[in-house]
Image (cartoon, rainbow, N blue to C red; front, side):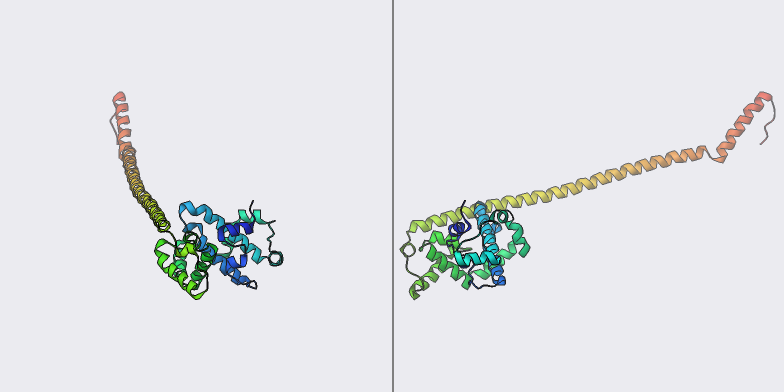
Amino acid sequence: MPSTLELCEKFYGTKDIYELFSINKDASENDIKKAYYRLSLIVHPDRVKEEDKIEATEKFKILSKIHSVLSDKDRRVLYDEKGVIDEDDEDSLGANWLAMWQQFFKPITSEDISKFEKEFIGSELERGDIKKAYLNGKGCMDYMHNCVPFMSCKDEPRIIAIVKDMIASGEVPEFKAFTEEPIHKKERRLKKEAKEAQKAAVIQEKMKKETENTFEEQILNRQLERAQNFNSLIDKLAQKNGDDATKKKQRAKNSPLKRLMKQNEGKAKQNRETKKPIWF
């Protein structure tokens, strides 16, 4: 199983965890926490395409592991002195990476990610990430697309201009992979991005229809419930009216006049038998 530092190099292009977090070796706990949050926003699984979620999740886990090292005095000293990370607690941490992140920060929403994107693009932070991706990828634009947050084909002219300024000032060396990139590589990126955008549109339309269907189902359910309640009310009224009619008949049957008439009928019958006059 790859070590944490090997995974850092695989996914972030460096084994230097301070470089990964863009902080100094004497960074405070608050600086570490802020760097951890910033990077987490960039690689959060909720901001990537469905096919990229597995890789984004792995990147997210790595950040949690690095944060745990930098936040633990003994593990941090071990890394500073030996350049190694104590992996003893990595398995348990890997299983609880999301719970650990939620200890520090509120749940990330799509609004949080959109807000960070607006703040990130054009900032010094983005410039630093562009420089790092350019150097680590030896000028490969495909590599830069994978490493620079929020980068798309429409951003290429702006980012190319930034890198050219760095080359002109001697800040970074010139790589032929960058200055002499074959046109077919750019065309391939454009086709891939267009295909992904089309796929995303289909998924979005499907989700919209599912939402509409759910809404229609809710309306139908409410209408059905109202109809059932109405029928139930009719049944209760009918039952009540039927009970009231029965009670009226019962009350009429047991009224004093009825009882007296019944008594007189009994006396009349008795007198007819004895031929006595009827007295009321």
